[in-house]
Length: 511
Image (cartoon, rainbow, N blue to C red; front, side, top):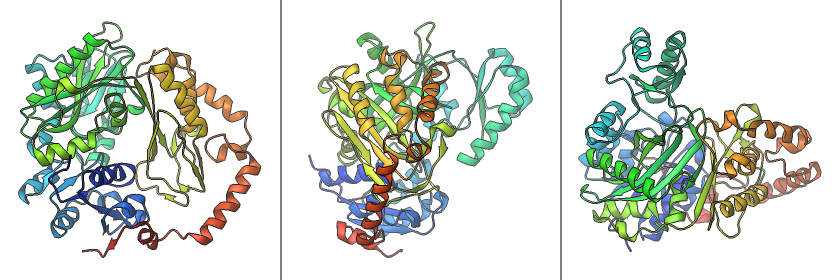
């Protein structure tokens, strides 16, 4: 099915920009990329039909620069902007400027983004529509003293959260009144740095909950709603998701229908349009589900849903925005098999997941039945310290959870990245963990499991040369050979703007 757009600007970078560009190609739509000076040779640039430079390297100067992105969209005569995830994907100002310039924002309306971006407003709407919420403060909290008073009323332990933003930032735990002041000030600093504003609220911390989210899609006029089932995201580190799967081992058909109905109620309450995710916590003691928040964008983990439903969520986003109607009905959604996603980040799990940057000296991407890799990596690429550390998303599908997990173990063993530290060894330990393989997990999985202990043992059993290439997979002699090959490649294929001409992309002078 062809979209009615002629030209779409992709306001993002890396893996997700490439993912959107591929969807646009499938639909016969011209793609416009933007790139920072750090991304001059990135694959999303070379694969787009046209690419425009955003002067600078820092996100605030480039991928978060609304004025510059809108200028490019207007002058390149774009019909729409796809924001991907992160950066400006939930930015009401960008959506409003699109509306004012007759450019379609592929996502919810600016009004919906304002509501969904306000966790207070969303919780109130959820309660009003008979959707259970975790006990929390009702209004923004002004100072640490007020926070301590409300925390005592709700009962410890509590989570002190920012009302705006997401991605696990600005969330701090307090187990007693003595810890509230430090938690408040820490959350305030982090939120202002990440989102530029801060308003706090307190939420009762559920002990050992499971993190469940429902993928929803609605028509452009918010008159039709469907769900694509759930994803479980309980394997986390400091509220940042690391592993996602669908379906959740803890949910049966009845629970899925119940929570999906909650999700659609919330979606209707905020007049949602396009693809979004409604997040919940499942109380491990009672089995009750509580509304957490609305993620008004495409999620990093959307591929697991695509694999178990067969629905291309990105193509559906574009079609909904272009044709205004849903291309699929609820009765047409079928669930088959199980899928798992591992986020392969440029981080050193042994060093408290410290970010790693450098040059990709060698890359081998796994394959085989049921294996999908979403990435924009290539040999010779420089991994910049300026942006998110995500290198690739490795997704495995199987008829049953165990088959998906076993395929993931093989794929992780085959996945080789030299030049930066990666989380591949960490994910291998998770996939082989007895609790994970039994479907037993919660948001305290890392603290309660022996994953990190086993990872440390594994690291100690290998030489320093082996570990420094990031995956415990290549011997010292192999690494020397890779270095020799990489040096040879470099003399033949310089990583510079001309590479895009070879790949078919065209650079456009800055506006």
